[in-house]
Image (tube, rainbow, N blue to C red):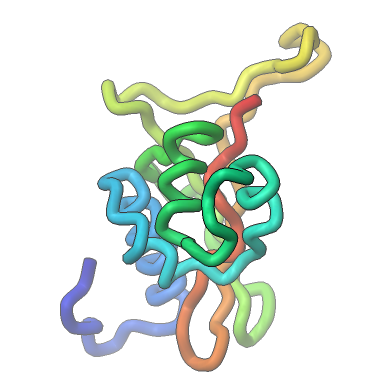
Length: 142
């Protein structure tokens, strides 16, 4: 993570940095720090983890990363666009710990022909009250 914002960094740079930092913090188990970079809803995490206090965001992230979704590192940003003055969409690829590409395969009895694997995932980063926030959580793996 940057300790000082580089001179010349524009909003797209800051959005990209926020997204990369968010997933690095989750991957490293630094859930309280990651929670500060998240601006999306917690409803699903609360539903999936009813034993976790609803306002304990660090504990919700810990539960999400250890029980529901692998909190992987981003290996590559394959596309990045500013879609509004305060909103950015970035498409990323993740890697497993061994460096192999993360692919979300078919689920729920479907075949690869019916549900082809996906390995690129869109994320939204918004500037809210002057701060950049990731609006989407890790890829859900059923």
